[in-house]
Length: 265
Ligand SMILES: Cc1cc2nc3c(=O)[nH]c(=O)nc-3n(C[C@H](O)[C@H](O)[C@H](O)COP(=O)(O)O)c2cc1C
Figure 1 (cartoon, helix red, strand yellow):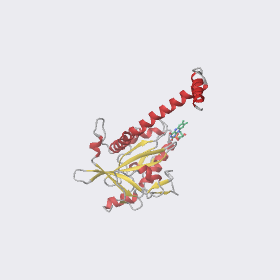
Figure 2 (cartoon, rainbow, N blue to C red; figure 1 turned 90 degrees about the horizontal axis):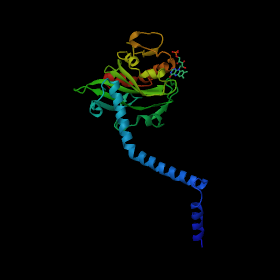
Figure 3 (cartoon, rainbow, N blue to C red; figure 1 turned 30 degrees about the vertical axis):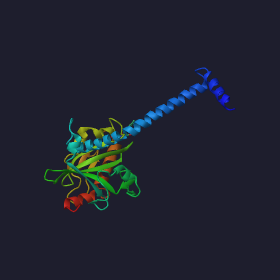
């Protein structure tokens, strides 16, 4: 009984003009379904490539901040000189709770079980992770040449993510580099300018009394601790000042760096 009715609907649909609303809607729906299938297929199949690229990009940034990156370098091979270690920031000690190869610093920073809400929050990050991956650049004799620490904090428009490389004394800066931010190109975006970044090399984080002295400021300070603020971008400069002091200070890696220097990590 219902068969002829179905045929009737199909026939009357078929007889509709090509630009009728039902036919237009049908084409749009089919097109949407097809496109979403293509996108889903691509997303699923390219996920492993995306993850591999993410890892590669991180390795490249670490090589860059340690002054070891140049065009054409075999990133994976060069990165083998770095040993990733998980640091318990509160204890200032290495932790074997997590596998450094698999630990996700981004997730940990937002996980209430692995991070703590900040009351004093100069870097404007809301929460601070309790565990972080640090990278030790090893010499051939296994001694540490450089310590690479992850840092992040708010500038004017965005959170800047980067690394600071310290010499083996844990006090002299070798380099600083941000790999992700959305500050204005030509203003706050000048944090990426190699000339500005070059100022960081050789600067001392603390003075002889162990006070944190590194500063990014317009007004010149003690030269061995002073970085010139970016022209026309005082707010981003203030953000960098605050985040660097936060991560190298007592709420950040200070305990670890003191222990590292004393050989008690
Ligand atoms: C469109 C626009 C984008 C800006 N982007 C930045 C920025 O990324 N970082 C920053 O510090 N200041 C930025 N500024 C300027 C700030 O509003 C502010 O004037 C500046 O940080 C003050 O620095 P100065 O004292 O060196 O001039 C921007 C201003 C405008 C109008």
